Length: 215
Image (cartoon, rainbow, N blue to C red; front, side, top):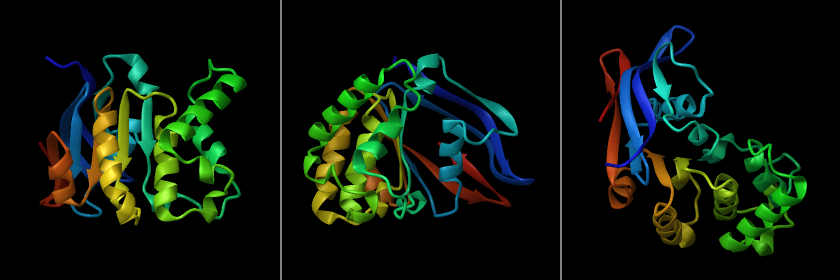
């Protein structure tokens, strides 16, 4: 049986007093490729924030049987969360993915960043600021940031929001290769994309006056 990386046990999550997720249970396994689907505003990103530790559930628990996993989560956010006016270069964006790697020297971090830039084939844009990148280029940079710390779990929030059809098929093929050694959680409102790529699917839907996750 596959090893459990994240064990979500009956969590409820609220903004102020407004319950967004109620009594959600879900397990993420080693080398899983889990698709989380549902409508915009349905609670998918709230669930992701809870896994990342950015939101604390009002009840229930999120357990990491292997504590190392908690500090080895690669996260690729939605593009609308990125301030493209911020004056930061591609290598600096990628290096920010190593913030949790406090045991690494500055020289080691630089070496990791250079290696992932080569691996992702983005040497030609490595000197650019993020505001100068196309949507597809930014997608590759943020994926590099998510992968630079060799994550045990990779979470991608609406990666289809990056408009680059030329790179799209290559992107999902790349995710399948990554999945050979890393668990992947793909969050999307695009059910067809998820069906084409994920091994397992969890669905977020509106139920009565709250949002519930149905597995």
